[in-house]
Image (tube, rainbow, N blue to C red; front, side, top):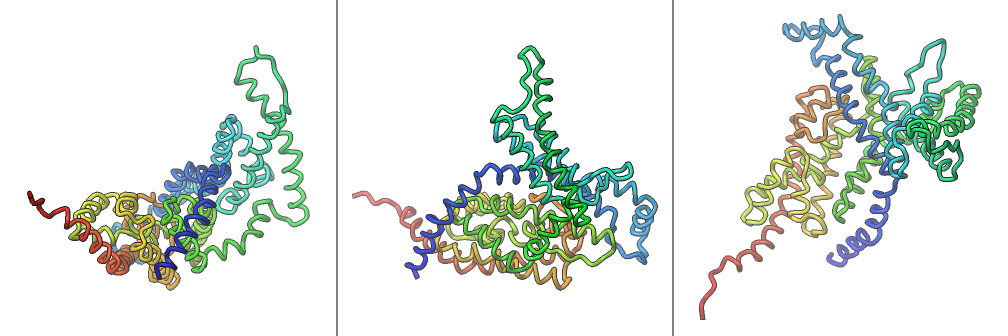
Length: 435
């Protein structure tokens, strides 16, 4: 068994870790991740307003407060939904600009000008003017993958042109802001020479806008990403990286953000249309059900630490309790330590996998509502779970069950680790005899 463990740890340390480290620092991956993070405040506010527009009461409720809320929403739907429409409803616009900005900064270019170029390029292909208006159907979840591709393309195009000094060279006497504006003339022309004809071709040949065509290509991948096997693979990869000392949530989460937001957009469209919700794998599902208390679902482990006989584990429990309530568990992961600790490897991997199976089954069988809203990832688990599922009280119960399950999974391994530490601590507690 020890030989098998050593072989596994060797593979993680020597094979998986170097690849993950390179991926985590790759400029395009970093730009996409940071672009999504920059867009989050808009998406959280928009999601909250969507929940406000869909009260958690039935139409025949006799409660006075429920009747008031339902009546107000029915009377002022357009005004209440406006914040949602201007945030979540056009989230791909913010994402395109944010990704381009971050990528341009990594090249030491003008981030603002790159963001403007990307925004224009995205609108050209996703929202071409029609009868004096701009269609917005592809500016939300449907346009996320297009926003990523267009923002990377437009910024790389701008970088290529600047690198090879292709553009207008103005005298030094010209004010800097004017020179910067002229730097965009050639990139703008290049966008209309390349992306615009492609968009027109797809419209005339297939009757689709570019985001619709791209979504049709990604549809099988999006469908597969919402399956239980895909969720389990993502959870396993994330925690293998964590165990090697690499922030797995940043790497895996950065890759999954596009799928999470696309799935969220699908659920919100279905909610607005009064249709059954279909998508499960969305960021709050990960944050508040799979990894309760942080990666490894360590909230149960913290509770065990608080009652430990080991002084070291008790101190880690006290130090990690409050952060874990807000899904921050670095004190536990690095203080225990969990990283490269053979005794905690199995539960650290197993607990989130079991949580994923239970939560997926509960959602698929409608024991809890599907996720329809984004809550800040630092929201305490039960509150965040209820918030993201449209204030479903059953989500709070599910979180409690998941914490209990993870506690049971950790318990036997915690006892073995505690025994090991006690053997190390007890000699230090013995009085020193004077010879």
